[in-house]
Amino acid sequence: MLQLGDRAPTFTLYDQNSQKWRLTDQQNSRIALFFYPKANTSGCTEQAVGLRDLLPEIGDVEVVGISADSPKRQAAWAEKYQLTFPLLSDPEHKVARKYFVFGPKKLYGREYEGITRSLFLISPSGRIEGTWVKVSPKATPGELLSALEKINE
Image (cartoon, rainbow, N blue to C red):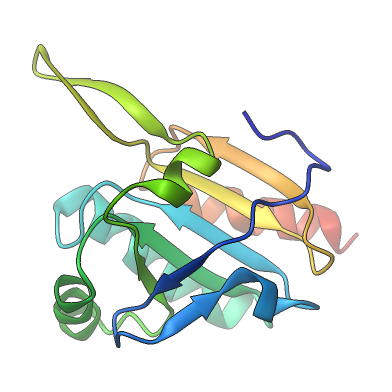
């Protein structure tokens, strides 16, 4: 599991517009990186829309989402809900594994592997400033806002 102060694992993935997005290109920017199980589902939509609605309050923090969904599916979801931030496709779960948010899950007694809903705050220098693993969709925006307020004190 990633700890506060750890260097954020770097990665390159394709966004909903099939453009490469690299964490290393975001130097000097604070990143709110959230992982979600599946685009266009109720919980993931609640999480993403909550973050979208928070954008005016968080200034220059860049919100970025990651799931295993294809860029095409991400694009349809982004358009449907006016999600203006990058939604990245991690179909082989390589990045989710680097962040320790892919693994065994249970739903209605069924066991399977999947992405655990999570949020990471990454500093402009590329260090982990906050981690929320198994965060609820509803709590995600509030956790981010609270962490940013503490950083700005």
